[in-house]
Amino acid sequence: MSDPRYQIDVSVVTRYLSEQSQPDQQRFAFAYTVTVQNNGSLPAQLLSRHWVITDGDGHVEEVRGAGVIGQQPLIAAGQQHVYSSGSVIGTRVGNMQGSFLMRAEDGEQFKALIAPFRLAMPGALH
Image 1 (cartoon, one colour):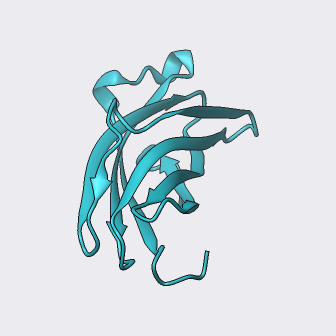
Image 2 (cartoon, one colour):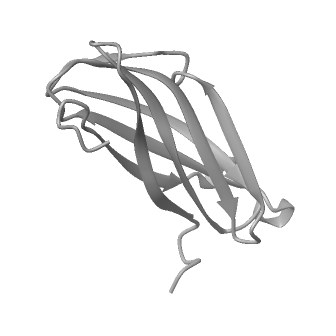
C-alpha cells in the first residue's frame, strides 16, 4: 500500500543453528529475528502472518497463523516490534518470504510485505 499512513517495513536477520541441525538426516535449523518497523502515521496491530518457505529442492511450505509467537502486537507510529522464531528445512540453502496482515487504528487492514531472505548453512554458498 502506498498510503504513507500505512507504512510498515520488515527486516530479517538469520542464523544457522548447528546444535539443532542434523545434516546427515537432511535437517537444517535456522533462527530468524524479525523487526517490524511502523514508519506510518497511525498505530497498527499485527493480526496474522503468512510465510512461504522454500528449500533448495524447490519444496514449498506455507505457514499461516494469528499474530507472531502468540502475540498480536500493537505498534505505535515510529516504533518497532522485534521477535525471534525459527524454521527447519531439508536442504543446506533455502529462502523465506511472506506478509503480515495489519490493522491500522482507523480500522484499515493492509499487508506488510516481507521480502525474500536466504536461509543458508555456513559454507553452503560460495
